[in-house]
Length: 405
Image 1: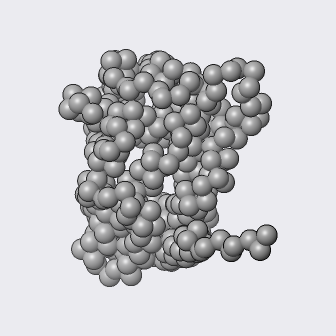
Image 2: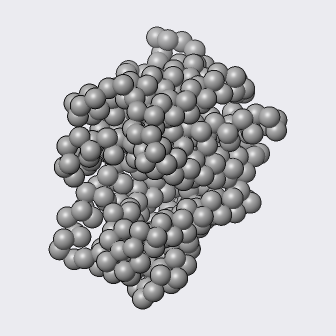
């Protein structure tokens, strides 16, 4: 892995993530200003996130069967074009349609950028590369919304979407010159086209890998279950800060900043993990993420909640680097796109379910109780994953009985 290649990949990850963060805030602002309806904001988020889950098998197959770099460049270029379209488009239907286009492109870019890490880093530096790339991703997700807030306040949504188009254009240009190591296998996995499995089997190849590697499968299921619980905190956090801790918007911003800072620290720390510790770090990070949210729910004052969210973010960063690195090490190159597409689909699907559930629970339970549910649910899901992994590893180490014959 050359320094230039890694630095370029880090810069691209930050730019594309900043574009994603800017786009989500600008889309939410656009539909709310045009409709003044909270349901419209929910619909536009679903328009972006649902394709990432629903199109995961198709997106993964495209990544595995076609040359990787042209696919990623095309997806980023289409995102730039969509952002330009949003800069000039008006009305809720057009905005929702273009938001769906964002989701389709993200269904390709998100797993694609994860699957190519071994081709950027080589097998010996996967964890370190994931560490830097995920830190850059979270830095971008922080900078994008901040830029969106500035532009929406001072110049309006058209300028914000124009800036978003510029970020994706930078990503397109960078991806077009990013050097990837050649694939070790022919795209699709077999040289003889007549011997390739049926299309339905190819679409299910990501699921087949996770069934064949039960430890990797359990890890993905566990992380999905943890996300389905802990992401409820995203919705409850603002209400908790403003109405429970009574700190106003500044307190909410501090909690968000604490979580993000913890994420960046956790991803960077995760880069030092040896391969043999990756599974334990991913599962331990999952449990600790829920613990941090549960501790925040018990906070009486802002500094306590801030420290708890920082701890939860750090644990989540470790979990992300551990999980992605396990998949990079274990997934065969010919199905890596489908594995990461499935992983992205699980994450975004779980997050959507969590936020929808939190919206209903807030009115019934209140913000503190929703945080308790989110944190304790994450702890339980992570602990169940730890127990399941211990049983799998014990079964794998059990000697096979000798045959009498």
